[in-house]
Image (tube, rainbow, N blue to C red; front, side, top):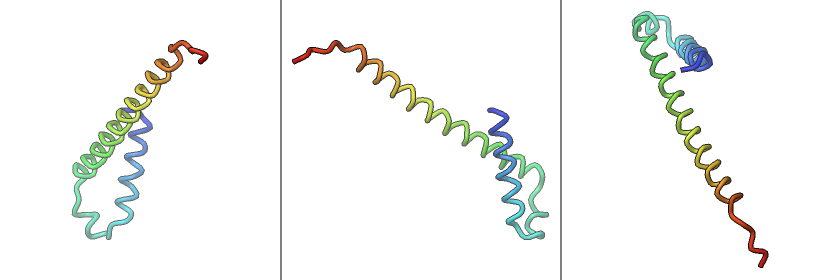
Length: 73
């Protein structure tokens, strides 16, 4: 994971904490917040992987199209 993913996950968790009532916030342990952050980072990484696969497919298609000779018909 990138530092950007870590920072983004931490911002999401912080926003989540801020949205909770104080009593609820205190019932959630630091370990649970850490698990939430890790889950968010994993999801971001998976989505990045999907995006990269799509981009690779587009690049392959473009290369295939540019390698075809023009028939000039």
